[in-house]
Amino acid sequence: MAYKTKEWRGNMRVTVDYNYMMSKTLGDKGLTDSQFKAIKSQAEEAFDFVAKNRGKDELFMGWTELMYNQDEIVADILATAKSVRKKFKYFVVLGIGGSALGPIMAFNALKHLHYNELPPKKRGGPKFYVEDNVDPVRMQALLDVIVPEETCFNVISKSGATSETMTQFLIIADILEKKGLSLPEHMIFTTDEKRGNLIKIDEKYGGKFKKYVLPDGVGGRFSELCPVGLLPAAVLGIDIKGMLAGAAYMDGLCSKPSIAKNPALCLAAMQYITMQQGKNINVMMPYSDNLKLVADWYCQLWAESLGKALDLDGKVVNAGTTPVKSLGVTDQHSQVQLYTEGPFDKVITFISVKNYATEMPIPHGCEDIPDVGFLGGHTMQELIQAENTATGYALMKAGRMNYTITLPEVNAFTLGQLMFLLEMQTAYTGALLNINTFNQPGVENGKIATFALLGKKGYEAQKREIAEVGEPDSKYIV
Ligand code: PA5
Image (cartoon, rainbow, N blue to C red; front, side, top):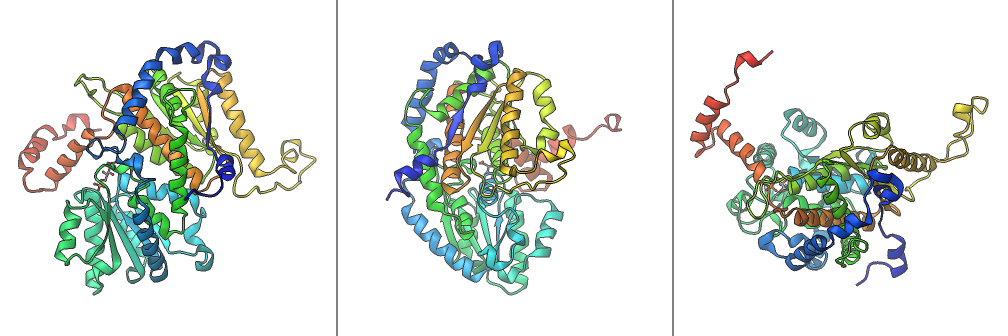
């Protein structure tokens, strides 16, 4: 069934304005139509690669179909969420990386910015926390504010082997058990269907844990629209069908192999061309506190997907650009000086909002002080939007490339569109670069070294190597 009316969906369309990327505004610092023409066939090939392989689990491209194949799962998630909301006062996600960033991002985008501090009636659901680290101080801080008896923990790990998540699990399981509480009653697992340690743990408990499947073909950073993100969102009362409908809507907007007609391909083409020009920093700057963590989520998506040593032919390419998160207007007072006058090594993505959830009028006052008085009678929405427009304009005047993704308002439907747009942009860019977008071999060495340092069986040789090679020389310590 279609989500809301066609007219409503049209009014909620997320758009991309790339005028300030082009030579028309930037002169010789900008892109030209002929540069787009020069990569037309490459862009078409990238489009075809994604179109041909979408949905293929073996290539980790199952994420492209999540909007179309989860009706039953969504119904189950909504039922679970209803009972969690009834039974528990706290809902805690245990996970890291792709298993944590999506849930935090959607929470921040779609719930009250001080949600946990609201009185229970206004909040309408359990308090929400995500443990995206193994900092002991953070864990203690969590334990200081939750009541285990009243908490549901969602352990999210595709592999069930991530040391950070399993450490969080062990600490919480120990606390629950010492209190005589049943683990399966207080924990929900989101994990691989058959493999991994969470499955083994569930077997030990006679299969009593409520489990959601993190599908085979969906990698962590592409998982927000599967149970990884949908369950926490549903527990928070977020319209998860709206998120999925938004993603499907954007999928429809990205159905053409043309840079001019496919917003994700257009974004990918611009990033690809500018990469060849040596622009190696990709700044994302939302002008919205609600969308602040979209930049965190995007940084992982971009960095883990595109930072690759080898291309698909085995050639050393050391691909990728460095994503940087920024926040408008806050970082106008911190980063923008560098963006405007520093090296010409950045492309800036603004995320703008047309209608904020509230306008906040600025009262008249201090009219005898011109620097202050001019603000009265406007709204904070007008101010943030003026600063957003002005920053883009000033950057363009300084010859700095920037483009703007605009959300008519921040809601589940537009967030779904934005996520899918950025996921498709990443997939197309990876295809243009001829790399494997969906693996992360570079993260493995660090994981192995951690296992060795903590004395995991089977990693004795690595431990010896670290002891020899990794021993710090005091000469280089000051
Ligand atoms: O994007 C990714 O694949 C990673 O960030 C993983 O999500 C992260 O390492 C956690 O892995 P897992 O879900 O297996 O615990």
